[in-house]
Image (cartoon, rainbow, N blue to C red; front, top):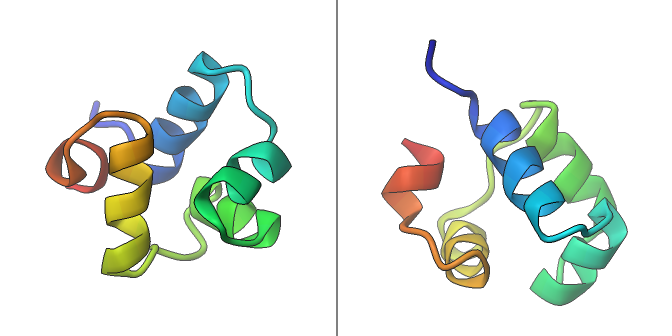
Length: 65
């Protein structure tokens, strides 16, 4: 079964031992946004997708599609 975007983000964040707040600070967004992405309530804007992918050294396609 394919992992959801939220599951992928949670797994990536946990792989770096970061809290939602720590990741949010590093990306320059709110921890609420990270929480919403991880429970699949919201999808990040393209600009934020690029920041997330760059931070984790992953492609946008690998995380979000």
